Length: 120
Image 1 (tube, rainbow, N blue to C red):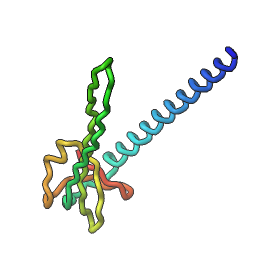
Image 2: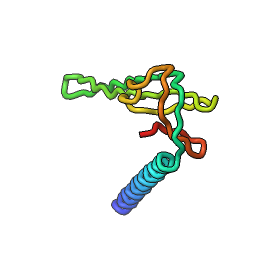
Image 3: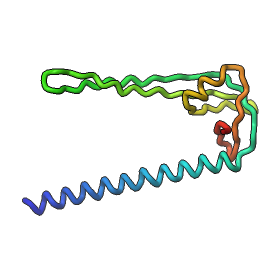
Image 4: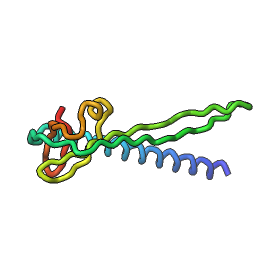
């Protein structure tokens, strides 16, 4: 019985390590792609045609003894929809960038290999 539990634990640890490595590698690839767009991309001006703010309401009740505490794990995502060369793109941005641009204003972007990012 003890040998079976050890092998289950070892398998679980291996699975966690595999997912951890995959998570890190995916993050490194994403960062490399972002840097490539910002370094090699052409400077362009795009027109902001829409702004979208999505709030994900995740309120989780936590029971501590006889007291229920509500933990607010709400997350807000911001995006700007832009028109560049008569093509629409949606850019995920932070709150500062979202607040900085209004519909109808121009935004500086980088275009590389069909991908667009906000120029920093």
